[in-house]
Length: 183
Image 1 (cartoon, helix red, strand yellow):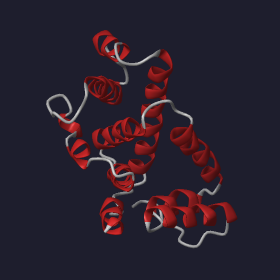
Image 2 (image 1 turned 90 degrees about the vertical axis):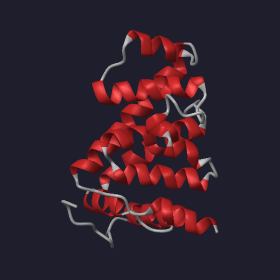
Image 3 (image 1 turned 180 degrees about the vertical axis):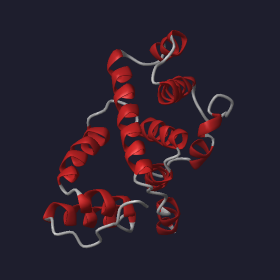
């Protein structure tokens, strides 16, 4: 970790964010303490993005988590991948799919529409663009709004990945904690 966490922030908004994270995840993630503890004004902007991701997109919840987890794995963001897996455990989604993400093309756990979305995510995350063939496969399963939302979601996921990786933030064991809390 390259920046020191702030476990007891002065900002009321950040204290509220820590409380909500502890309630939802079982602990306040180190990433929150580093990012929002040091730059409280970013908490409000992030809240808006997260609310949009969770409540405004027409994409299925599981697909949103598959896409953001996949970009996290590709980008080497262990914090984000761990967070998304914890969210999937809390939502009682089958973990086989999350374990097989990097083999989505051959795994029997994915539908053709999910494969198209994950191929698009992979290509855009790695190459910053999608080939015509990848885009046409995506178009055969999703309408324009959903395609735009997939591109936006992948962009936001990559933003969070790059932020966490640049700051040296790593997994907080959130998925393991979510698993323990289920039992």
